[in-house]
Image 1 (spheres, helix red, strand yellow):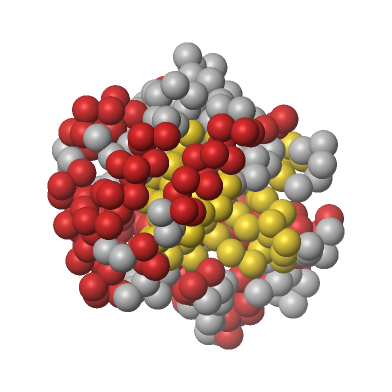
Image 2 (cartoon, rainbow, N blue to C red):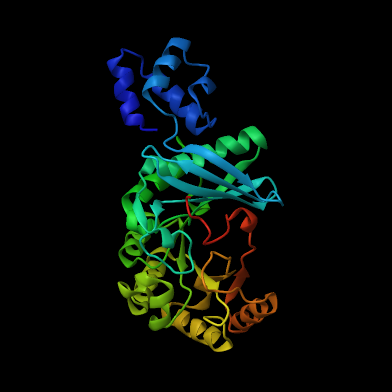
Length: 340
């Protein structure tokens, strides 16, 4: 919701300033999703506000729950009719992580990603990003009495190509008077947008940075992550080195495993060597992501080949995790969001 416009509306209608705080607390603290969810407001005022303001800038069209119940995907409609997808992931009992979108579509066009094949429709506004959290939090509160413990900017779109809106949404999520998540519970994933990484280091040094790397050879990475043509690995390495010097924070390295493309034994050695040109191994957590089917030509490696890849990296001194695929049965896993 645009609270600046609401403030002007209330003032123009001669209403006291405390009404704005009542609405803000109801939306951000109690996760009200409709004006009827705010009974502290007089009925005539609620009726008037219904005709003037939508509480959320996103409207839920469809909610899909995975068979195991550990992933929930929302399809939201925006005011102009475009659609985006957002996913809740149950990583801990009663504590969920939310993967939010920052663009309708994506201009990077990674060939293994369903979002990329859609191309870019437009950037999302700060409200459209933050309201994905509010709508998902309302759903959890009313259906399970659970809450969201962390947010990952890793849904549809490249966050740093919409930096200003992402930054405003991050501030709303970290503001104790609004959503109030700790900055270390907020993560932004980028395909390697160097100017964005540099701004992020200065403006959000306590938030987490994740890099969708997938290859450490420019020729291969140009194919897998076309943004590499603008910001090749040499520039990315320098930006990450400076990021670590400024923040003293670890970087989460996302590496999608594609059978026969980037999962050979020799590529573990190249990945280890490239990371060491940036910083000591203690500054990295390598997150291996077995490929989720998106209709492209790629195949996922077997569990055994994933295990071997992980063990070789661990022997080289790197901390390694393998992402558990959640929500594949509802097309809600990594790379599968398309927005319909």
